[in-house]
Length: 359
Image 1 (cartoon, one colour):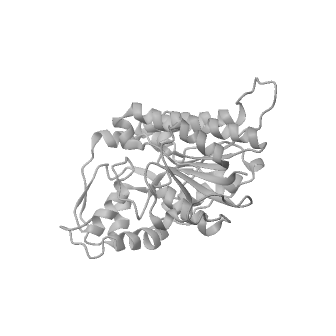
Image 2 (spheres, one colour):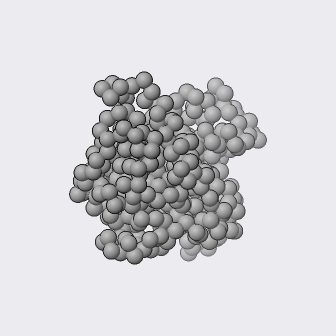
Image 3 (spheres, rainbow, N blue to C red):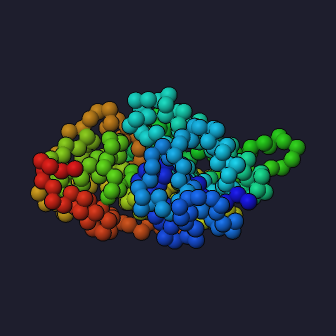
């Protein structure tokens, strides 16, 4: 018998590590111990796939495999060794790097996803039961043409303004469509009726983490303000003060993935759902930072290229479909996100550092 697993790609990233921790705390997963087979036939494990190793405190919860989602031989081996019941596909080449390496982004973000969708479809047919495929998408799939339109569409719904202006956004939108195809239309001309996979996707706003250092993403000006303030160094924001986009604290991003995975399939009326928490202008984000770090030095010096990208994103997302279909509700509003999650953990990260010797 093959061990039953939930598979997480991109597990070494911030979302992946937080997801593993939450699943280990709240779900009935078995821990693999020293990682040697055989595993228990009736037990359910977490299987991770990433190019990087997990920290030891996270790795103890999982069966860890190091490798690429583009390695078809590796994927074939995993299918032969494990019965994959669900996939959280977090691996991706993120927005900033995707703009500099669009060919590599397409290979990882699209071809990698395509390979995993094939795997999930084959596993669904073999098991006679749908494999759940949970896919995080992004606000980058939207592309509003100008600021006047952005002001007119205060809260954008899932099907509105799907005209991305970045490679990352294009990749995410296409993968949403691929997931819908494999879930609802794959092998529609075949004589038999194969069991389809169960594709579910959430479109995230800008994610704000207390533990990951911002890496130059187009929504990173918010967390960059916080990290600079905690380190005691000046920060020049790369967007205008009036720019507004939605944000979400990282724990709510993990909550959204798990809540959607647990939702009864018959209640889901669409393959892709907006989720969000709070919407702030860059000036309002600065005000929140100053409430906790009164000496923070934050100025504004817009970078026209990055500013242009953020201007195409909605000021807020309409997540009423997620609220209605699977009871979505964030736990962190803006006040709680700053006071209970962001500020204490970011402050602890840099405690004892001076401006000249910060991490």
